[in-house]
Length: 145
Image (cartoon, rainbow, N blue to C red; front, side):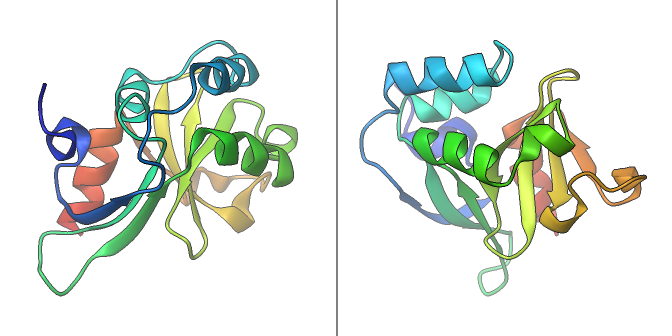
């Protein structure tokens, strides 16, 4: 088995597992159900090793961007609390930078989406969002600055 940090954490300079154990299967099943029956394979791979993580993404030693992949239980709670599905029915909250940016999956296009929290439900928000085909792609983009 590959080292956990090699699975999808390309460009992540430092990280802390939020829970040392894999995400509970029942929680992932509930999350998938709530997300319309689909979760990204790379997300499931990470969650099978650690129930969430937080870290600093970037290529320079002194500069980085925070990233937090929410533990399964928190993803459900946060998606409901922020009423994401009410404003963006195809989006599901899975991560954050801790200061105003949400990282979500689009259950229709199967892309990762970066979107300001304040932009949920805003008309024409597409100018502010960025999309990525995988968790690795999202992290590599953040790492490149």
